[in-house]
Image 1 (cartoon, rainbow, N blue to C red):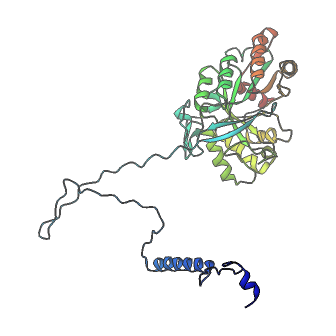
Image 2: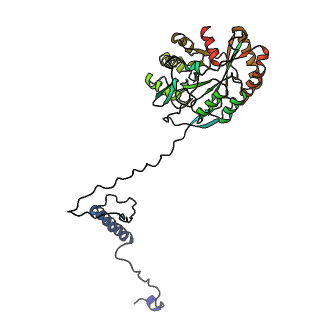
Image 3: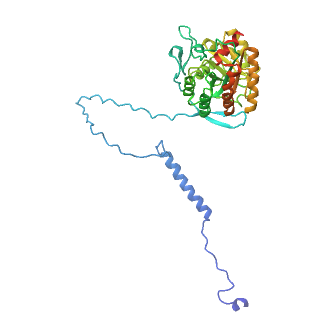
Length: 388
């Protein structure tokens, strides 16, 4: 025995052996997981629950108090009629159209009526209405009365005087309640008001305008060159669509409200320059006894040439009065419009539905007669434009 073993203290110098499992821990965990997975897949194979995994609830149904037991030798009476319950009303879809202020660039989401919801023929005479799948649209009556004549608001002295005549069309109304109300209240009756088909209360506003003595126009959305980056709104007339598709869209817009003397272009630089697409639309407008008004925004518009071939009452804006939307610049544009009226006997101007435009036109109109001019609605100016 070595000397070190004799001299070393007891219990020192030797390391105790640690207890070790015969199987390592990772192997135990893996085995347990294998057992669990095997049991799960085995249950899934033998289970016959087709809705396995879906949430479920168990309820107890009490039998009806008046239930009768039917025996084999007793005649079976007919079950009582079941009362059909109306299905729950689907939530109304709220469509919107984005209106962009061309001066400030401000974007505004404006609610509009549903694209397939038939419009009520508010403000229209039944003799001048035709039913379509979208609602009622204008037509020439059976005795030949044209909507452009029936709904016209011609001043009594307009036909008697030789004074220069001026017509002004305010476009873009109907999508802003306050602006529309202000235009109806502030502007004199001979000023024509043009409404887009997208306002939620377009029919009510159009009827109110007519009650106040204004002639009204329907603005028809047409494809601009920048479409779809610049989108006029739902149901826009497009050069890529067939004749039937565009006519159907035109009928949708025509059904939004009634009582208008004619239609006006809304954007549409590409569409009005495309003869194949534009001609059928103007023929339809003429067929329905309406005036067509060109706002003059596109120099490539074919409206003037087509109107002569279709016998369409036609008017075109001579000057955009608020191309620069400031009171001073609008005033200068009105002076140019007066010069055109003196030269040609009639002149047509157009403005947007901007507060500054409405206020400046209302101010100018108060003294127009004292300067020798007669304010007339678009139906008078358009008839004069056609004959000139």
